[in-house]
Image (cartoon, rainbow, N blue to C red):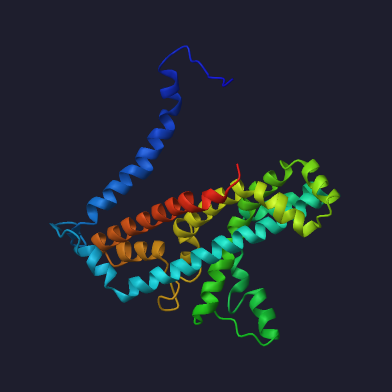
Amino acid sequence: MEKRVVFQNRWLPYLLVAPQLAITLIFFFLPAGQAIYQSVLMQDPFGLSTEFVGLQNFETLLSDPNYVSSFKITMVFSALVAFLGLAISLLLAVCADRVLRGASAYKTFLIVPYAVAPAVFIFNPTLGVLSYVMRMFGIDWNYLVDADQALTLLVIAAVWKQVSYNFIFFLAGLQAIPKSLLEAAAMDGAGPFRRFWTVVFPLLSPTTFFLLVMNIVYAFFDTFAIVDATTMGGPGQDTNILVYKVFVDGFRNMDFGGSAAQSVILMVMVIILTVIQFRFIERRVNY
């Protein structure tokens, strides 16, 4: 029988959710509405004159080769960050779940990177420790002039930040799996690899699905600081992902209408990707 919470005051439930609704309205719906409004306008850099241009800002963007290139870079970057972040964190969670001695210290050590900024300075072409080591092995590391190395650095820094977040959820999911199921599979002759893919991973599918959505949203929206602190979109525009291009065009080039149009496109892209994940991938999730 389903239990229902009964409040003595009919307005108390609304009062409890009011702060969350206010935050969502102020920090999501209002900025999104403002971006949609500005995306159909053309303004001068000082905001003294405004002209309604309809979909002209979107047409200009879609015909701009730099924007198309930024779109492709963002797709590759987001796919790498999501895949590597999930794969590495799942591997670490499986290893941590098997540790018997010093388990608490091991798990704490793996969570620390989430609270510590990515150590990108060790990749500095002139002062970085790893750069010096790579030069000893004949690897000329300089992400300031090499586009592939710049993208690699961004992926490493983004994955570094997200691995600990994923690790916490995967470890909690692993610890919630009944050991009796694994023991039964072992008694049936299933090896460790087969037990993982036939028992553990299906039971982790809700957690994996949630983290997949969160990692894609993270790669699209929450990696601005990493780009700004390392490559600043360079060399050239080879790491100018969409969220950083919105900033550059809006605050440096003073193209407010074009920047707003990019924000709208980015928001629509993430919504479409999320809907696709819930529509097709969630079917394979075992709750």
